[in-house]
Length: 595
Image 1 (cartoon, rainbow, N blue to C red):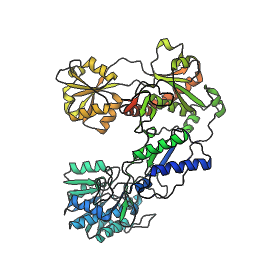
Image 2: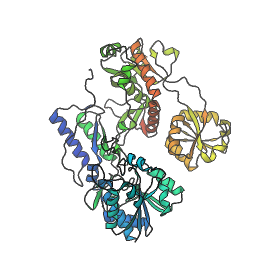
Image 3: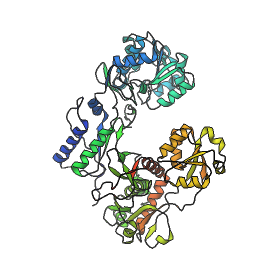
Image 4: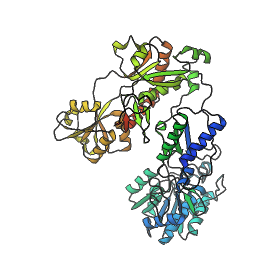
């Protein structure tokens, strides 16, 4: 069937959510009622999104000014608190600030309040760039006290709320009994001239801010994500994000960001799938990443976009610039001519055969609910190709070589290499993957390994993932070393960082991903191995489809998305997986193995 409608978003009305409600069941019932009443068909990969606010409300995840004050006082005592980079929002920060100020007052201490300028982290303005230019002020080097700020810029009110946040926040602090001093600077280390005890309130830059402050000699650095990570006097909490993502609930309480809620999305997915047969995805969502065109404010005040989501939503979106294709690749073809140029087995559908027994290319990832989801970087590539060609994707686990030969499917994707003996069965696409291999160690051991020959010593413990090509590489290049096989790449990384391994063989793209998060790792040596590369098998003689597939492959390689597919697949393959065909009920045929 031809696709004529693109993405559709619908809001579903639900009952008012109260503490203790089964939010997952309410969502399931509300969606089922809506699709029945409005005659809306549900499809595989439809997304059901639930705002974090109602999840936290159902959890009863609230805290008061007194709860915040008690935690702040316990951490900071009577020391002057340097409170830096607050977001300019009554909803997001006013109650938090009152609690912090009351905590300071309990210790008889002072708050030095340091604003970033000309705006806060998400774009709420204190002063315009034009005003800075007019006064000759460089916000990256110039530090202002309150008197100088007022002399230069006077009173500045928020364009939407009409609030002068400098005065408003100062008054809130004084109202709780604490003294306040105000400064304006963008280098967090400026606060250390006033106190060595800092509470940084930035959101997305918080880790870097903490690191810079500690390196510069701060004695105590906490972020909002370190306040209320455990209950205080029976309060709510968030073990991972603390006060980050909280919202004003009443004049004296905040609703915190939801606690662990993966069970919520899994229950929603399972309930909808059982009721309708559609394998939907589900997520709990916070702020997105849009910018108000008038106020210039980014909606980015939550610590993450989604604190919980099902497996099919993992990774990054893939966008196709149709206007670019229209102006370039298909400039000489009209829309009707282009549709006619590519024919498939089923009109409007790209049918792909695969054998899901070759992780991380294609396999089943087992979710926490025990459900098997087809995964792998070739499956992600299949979706990319289908989207590129404007087709629906149908993946069929089967005897792919026979089906390609019979031309009952369009593509075969199963870790193919372009072997001559297959040329009479299929046409080969361009190579899309020639993944490298690396020897990885830690920075403090890098000097031990100038070459692969240096890894081949009996005193070294060398790691590799069980059953992987990396085991073969270790046995080939480091036969005298002690080979430690571990079930997951994450286990290999953990043992490397803990010093239990001297080095490890890891696929390069995976190793580089971990090195970005763990600077202690060193992706040290390239490891040679023979390979031809991976291709897509295309139904023999379908030249237009072959050309379309090759264009899609060129695009996915050029924009870097293929590397993301590989990284995501390796991450999923390190968890619970199943390799093989499902039974007639679509269930795992035997006990799944750790990948």
